[in-house]
Image 1 (cartoon, chains in turn yellow, blue):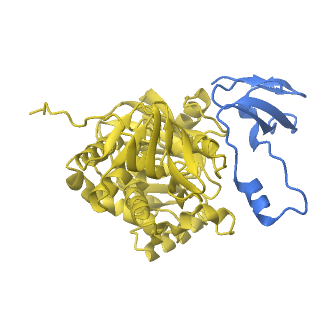
Image 2: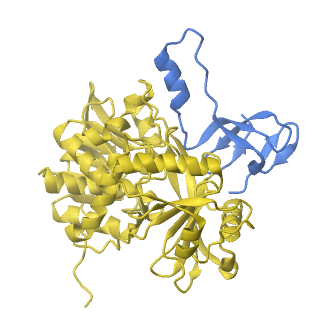
Image 3: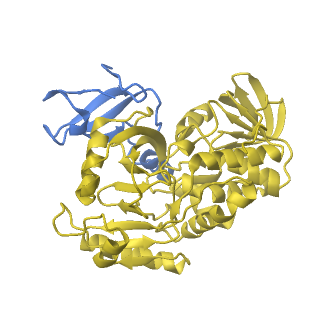
Length: 395
Length: 79
C-alpha cells in the first residue's frame, strides 16, 4: 500500500549552524547524514539553490565500480563500492543496487597490456577483477560483435564482477530522508552568494535570504566549484565540461552486463526497466550549459551500433547532460581548503556518483575530527604544488 | 548549442573542426618560482560567462585562434 506520509520536510534555514553544507547533491546529503548519524553533530544545514539532486547526482549513468588504477585511490573506491551493499538496509530505502558486472573492451595489444597492468594493481588492493578472451565475452554478451569485421575488432576485455548500477534518484532521496530523520535541515531555494571570512577562519555564508553563521562550512557543489572559487577569490585546478547521456526505447531484456569501450568512448547498460543507457565522453570543450548535441549523439550511436548491430531498430528517446569539473589527474580534491573551517569535496569530474558513500563518510570524519582520513590524503589540494599528483589513468 | 568560430583564415566554421586549447593565461616569467608555475599549469579561472580562449583549427588551416566566448550561452563576441 502506498504511503501517504510525507517522506521529507524541507526547512527554512535558521541563523546559526554548527555545519553548513553548500550543495544538496548526493555528496552533500551523504556528508550531512554521516555527520549527524555517526559523529553526533546536532545542527547541520544543507543549502541547495535548485532542488536536491538537480546536478550531477541525478544526471549520471548510475554506474558504480572500483576499477581505477592509482594505488593511492584504490582503497577509497573499494570502500565505496562495498558500502553500497548495506546502504539500502541502513537508509531504509531501496536503492536498487544491482551488481551486474562491468565488461571493458580492449581493441589493441597496447590496451590489453595496460588493462592487465591495471588488473594487477586492482588485485593487489583486493578488488576482484578478471581478464576475458573473445570466446568468454561472446558467451556473456551474445549480441556483441566480437568478430574481426568491426572497425576496431575486440581483442579481449577486463571484467569487474562487483561493478554495477545503483539508482541515483533513489540514492538522493534515501540520503535526504535519512539525514532529515537525524535532524539535518535540508533547505532548497537557498543560493549561497558569498562567504564570511574573519582572518583566516570562515564564520558563515551569505545567501539570497541573508547571512547564515556557521562554525564549519563544507563545499560539495559538483560541477559548479569554480563559482565557489570566485566567491573566495581563489582558483581551483578544474575545467568544467558537460557529459552527455542518452536513453533508448524500452526493449526485451538482452544485455545482462555493463559494457564499455574506454578506447572508443562508449558504454551502455540495460536498466531494470528495459531501456538502454548510452554514455560516452566529455564534450571536447569547456561549457557550463547542460545541452545535448547532434554531434555527440550521432558519434555515440554510430560507435555503439558498430558493436551491437542488432540495435539498428532502437531509437534514442531522451538525452541530457550534466556538468563535470575535471582535474588534470582524474582525481578529486577533498579535505582542507586553506581557510580554517572550510572543507572541500570538489573536482569529481565524471566519477563522483560511485564515490558517494565513501565521500560522505570520510568528509564527515574530516569535518568532525579535523584530521584528514588516510584514504583521502592523496586527494589534497596541496598535491598540485608538491608534485604529488595522483597517477590515475582515464577510465 | 549551435555556434560558429570565426577563423581569420577559413571564415566561420563548426567548432568540432577545432581542438579546444583552454582559457588564455599569462605565462609566468623565466625567474618565477615553482608555485607560480604550478598554479599556471593546473589552476584555472574556469569562467561561467565570457572568457578569452585558444582554439586550434586542426581540420582547417592549422592556426591557433583566440576567441572570446560565453561558456554558458556560447555567444561569441569581438573583444
